[in-house]
Image 1 (cartoon, one colour):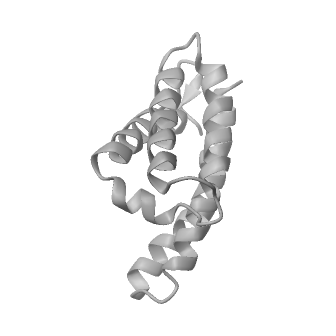
Image 2: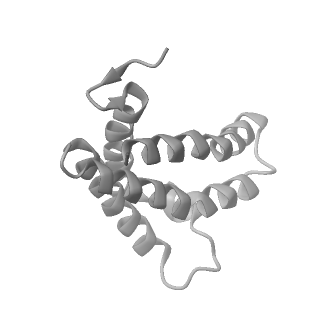
Length: 124
């Protein structure tokens, strides 16, 4: 049984601190994020790190307000889809790393699906 808090599930509410925390990390510890930006993208990796950090903070803010939650859910789902290539890139880069790192990088890939579904659910 799914327990809800207001009109969103607990898992959907979890997206708020998840995005807020990730957004802050994009500014506090930029190097790991810079390192997974696909080389094929134009411009500097740092720019993508900062822009995605701002976007994650915006998603958290939009999701936290009931009046903007629907837009926030759509924005968050689009953001999760947009950063998915970086997760694939990380998995590729870590293919020769110790197995623990490989599990983390590969495990992140399917986790995007329930996160996207939760974001879309918050948009309803």
